[in-house]
Image (cartoon, rainbow, N blue to C red; front, side, top):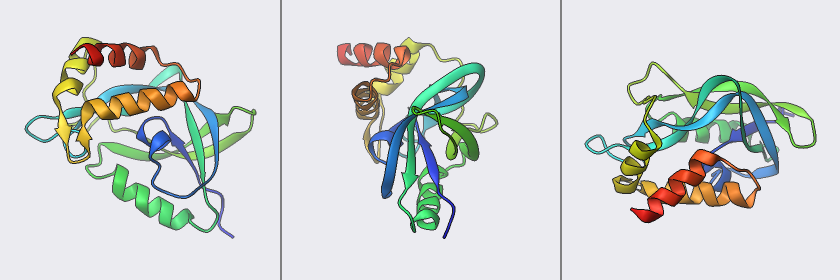
Length: 176
């Protein structure tokens, strides 16, 4: 039997994991924050007009709340291969096995995708207004960037997870 495979979802993996999930639990990843700090040139934008997608940016003392997803038994290798192809399309993310704390207090090691700060798609320091302007206009092969924001915010809200930046961006986007 293979070891369990847990995956930490903080953006689209929450609402579109793309793999068979045996368990899902609200979880917290310490020392990282969810941020629109990655230019999207594939899925939610283009090389000519990049969008923005969420990434985990290291930030000691902070925490990101999301979902820990356990892959269905027997699908671990296929899940890893699928996520590698999906998330590492340009290597703006790096794969990491990081400890997450489940809502029931258990700690598990989860496959997590964090921003590669050395990659040219990393964009630190954009104001929320700048982020909103980019998200409002960008579109990629998976659709409008605004749909990505709105779906992620909706699913976080349904889970009872509050993210003030996502709330502000969602309100701003609906006004643009």
